[in-house]
Length: 265
Image (cartoon, rainbow, N blue to C red; front, top):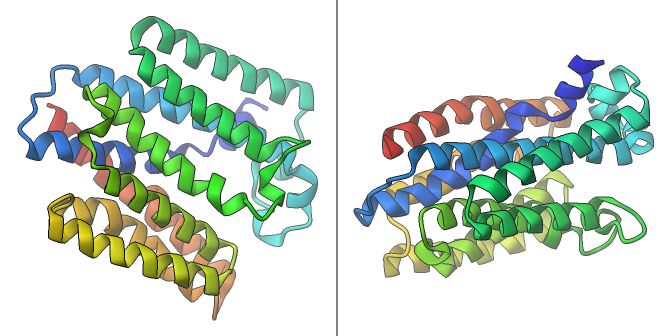
């Protein structure tokens, strides 16, 4: 049972948090801002990842019946091994409570506030009666919003949420939305969002809001996953989804963590 609960947190998906933390850290690095709280930044990354692990667990619980009918999700933790719903909710509650207790005690209030927004956003997205996940608003409140909040949570630990330019927040929002739309095989909408993101990217590179290294951090790892996701629209969907998962959630995670440690230490 414990193994199943841990699997439900999708530990490797912490790469999404590490990606956004690394992007924020590059702004401090290139501006020459000293990082005097490296352990707090690492702790913040762990707390954000723990919170998201709990939210993924809740997501799997609320999607249980839908996932059972989806051939691509048969390896999800609660599909392979049944766990009592009360135990799952207790597991979720303990992680969330622990995360926020630590955050209140040891982290800036702005960081705790942003984590509260992550929690609220995901609860509204996942739980009935609102459950935006099943509405036309889903692309606006899924990966898109979450990417912005992850990025901002590291920026506040560096002392200023606007250390990262506003245009970069908008760009990451569009990138997250595009990834969601490709995952849902909405190629037309994904192409429109991709065109908008490309235009904004050219502006950022021209204006100096993002340099080529930051572009690599923000885009290339996601691009590696986006290629098989895009190809999944035309061929071998299951294989392409697995390849995208390995590239972004496992291969890229090693790269993200190595760069984070180099910058903060």
